[in-house]
Image 1 (tube, helix red, strand yellow):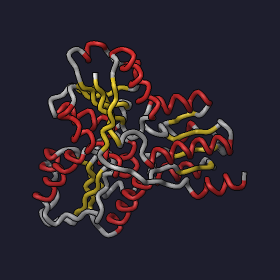
Image 2 (cartoon, rainbow, N blue to C red; image 1 turned 135 degrees about the vertical axis):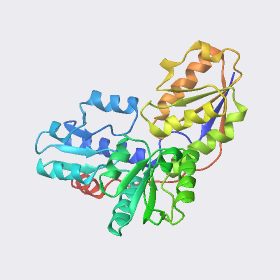
Image 3 (tube, one colour; image 1 turned 90 degrees about the horizontal axis):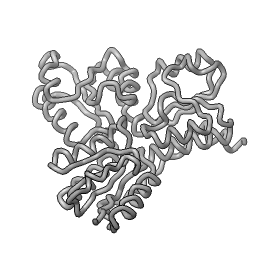
Length: 312
């Protein structure tokens, strides 16, 4: 069996920054720290910090007054920030800068009188945070079919934004439908889908014709990981999204000569390597790198945390 190992894969700059934020918070404050939602959408990462004593919460009222609270990489709405202030929480913002960019665009367009069409998945943490920036000026759509149901006047003052972790093709189809129906619709000068999402999808697109099976390391609630799995499915190749080697099933590999492996932007490299070692042990697999692009993006820790670290 041959393994084609996609590159780039795994952690993006935003995920690296968020995890480093939490690690540094533990160094500065100890493990009695709270995180609003999962720090990133990955079971392995969340379990590691939970075992250290970090508490992940879904509502601000779960956090005792005066505690340290970290905002996850997906961002939060102004309402959540206000609730944190009311509870006198010491907050550290680990929001990915690319998500912050979308938040700022939402505020800008809303202040200029635009109604914003946000392309994204209902209920996703990032979407909830973005919509919270201008809740009366944003309409969420997920598909071209939903664009057809929009009831804005033909000359409405509109702009669109996108969730950063969408499939490029998925977003493109909705954007095309929007531009056909509302030719006047505005959009940011630079697209919102993040570089890492685009690069990981590009690598799988380039690799998929050469493999019999695609394995994507990542969690089920990771939007960008699910998009990678969908590339395999839409290409007619079996594809499985797994958290680690423990989920591998022998029947997947019957008659398979070449396995493609990639990882979502929130999946740590350790789960990739454990999966590869399992396939080597079971099937005598060999590994070939499949590199399509280089990545050199780096995000600094939030200023408030850098100052605390220096003082410590």
